[in-house]
Amino acid sequence: MYLTVPQQPDCVTTWREAVRVLDARPGHCDYNVIMDIADPIANATSEDPRVAVVNEFLLGYDKSVETVANTISPRGLYRRYGAPAFFEVFSKKILTRVRRNERWSGYYFERIIEHPTLDQSTFNQGPVGAKLQCHDIWSAAGT
Figure 1 (tube, rainbow, N blue to C red):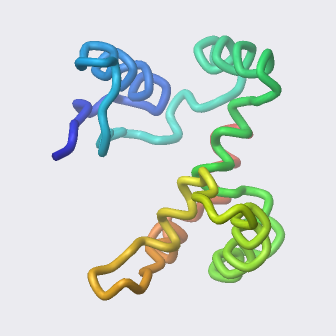
Figure 2: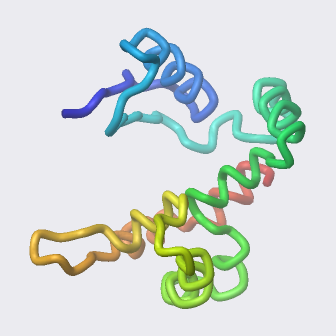
């Protein structure tokens, strides 16, 4: 099963709606939440007061909006190596290091580039996302 969040105009509004929808669920949680964002780069700047307040909260826990965003797509590796090379660099350098204790890394990006298949192998969905020209998206977002 999955839970869908109705389409919202931008990322910030989508995340806020997802929180509202999840908060209404029993136990205030769910799995396989699918969100639909009409324009992923609209209003996506650190100057947006909604982003700034979340960032201020996260800074109190030694995190930031940037930290969270990097679990979704590691911008630094993309800038340094480009696509498709950064997929392999992430798998060989980052995942090898964080998997030393044999647990999931916590990176959403890991699930994108190592999506399990029925035959127990993995499928890299990343090249599809790379076509979105991530660097341009990050630049437009002002991060």
